[in-house]
Structure formats: structure tokens, C-alpha cells
Image 1 (spheres, rainbow, N blue to C red):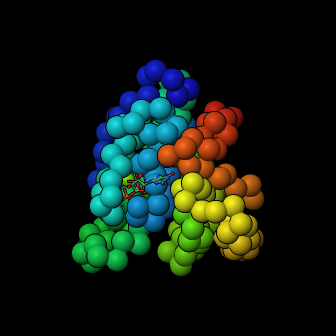
Image 2: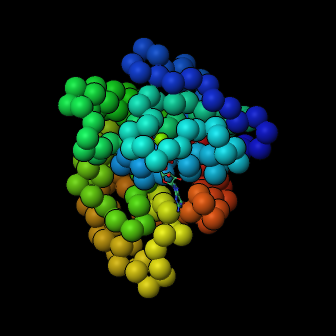
Image 3: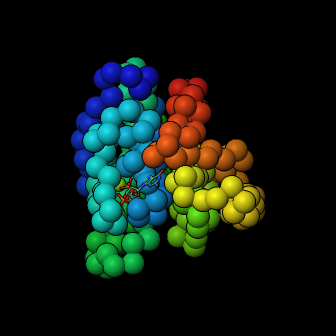
Length: 195
Ligand code: GTP
Ligand code: MG
């Protein structure tokens, strides 16, 4: 699925630009800078496929990546970036909402949560939107390399508690580090197993 021919297909700024839903897809949602683009790069083994950056709000389009005979991987614009202009935020939110509620071939949303910070209010909002849209979502903890073992459990507990309130949540968390490769194979297997 992820070997060889994963490729960037297109960036979409409006609903009418979405590729035909001729295969299933999974999307990656999360706060700005949480590590969505880095995770897609780690999954595909292509360092520069999705543009990762230190500048929050870098990914402003819905970016579609193809996999070999498998689903589209969809990199969503990050939310919760405080310094983004109001009009831009409103536009993203509308697009995000329309995409999440209207995409029939979307099989699962991965909601990325920083292993140091846990679930924030903006994450809760996205989760509520996913509940409403009846899109099953699974939380992927990112940047696991940045937390000490002893601090990890507390954050995970907070996340599990938050998830228990969301009917569309898939209970199993995936712990990842795009930097070190932790959990990447697990996530690949989860994606490969969707149909
Ligand atoms: P937006 O597109 O702005 O929404 O951000 P994003 O969620 O795509 O984040 P991106 O992948 O660009 O990563 C943001 C920053 O976090 C970059 O500097 C990455 O190098 C860093 N980063 C991402 N994943 C990891 C990780 O697993 N470990 C560590 N240590 N840093 C990471
Ligand atoms: Mg990005």
C-alpha cells in the first residue's frame, strides 16, 4: 500500500475540487503543528511528500495523496491556530465541515493529538463534528518521543476520558513518533485493514 507509488495528487480549496470518490479514503485532522504532514511522510516513507513545517498553519488546502491500490490519504488544514486571520479561519472551518460531513468514501478520520498536551477544546469541537457526521475517528498520539515514559499515562488517561464522550470515537489509541518511527507500522496496518 505505502511502498513505491504513493504520490501527491492535488490540493483542494473548495468542495468542487475534490477528486472523484472512486476509492476509500482516510483523513488526518488535528491542531496546527500537531504533526499531520510529518505523519503522512512517515507512513509513506517519503520525507518530502507532505510539506511539514515549523510555521503553524502551513497546510491550508486539503491535500490528497494516493497509495498503491489503497485509500487516498488526506492531509487536512490544521485548526486552532490563534494567529490566523479570522476570514481564513472561517473559510477553513466551512471547508472542513463540508468535507467531513459530505464525503461518502471517507472511512476513518485520524484525529492527531500531541502526546504532551492531550485533547484541547478545538479537538473536542472536531470530535463533535465527526460524531454529528457519523465519521468514525481514531486518535493518533503524535510526538511520543517528546514525552517521558512517566508523564505519558496521565495524558493518555485524559484522552481516554475525552473519547468516552464521543460516540464516533474508536476506543483504541495509536501512539506514534514520526521522528523515531514508533507506531507507524501499526497505523499502516490499521489503514490497510479498512475497506
Ligand atoms: P500544519 O500543516 O501547520 O497544520 O502542521 P502539521 O500538523 O502538518 O505539522 P507538521 O507535520 O508540519 O509538524 C510540525 C512540527 O512538528 C515540525 O517541526 C515537525 O518536524 C515536528 N514534528 C512532527 N512530528 C514529530 C515527531 O514525531 N517528533 C518530533 N520530535 N517532532 C515532530
Ligand atoms: Mg501540515
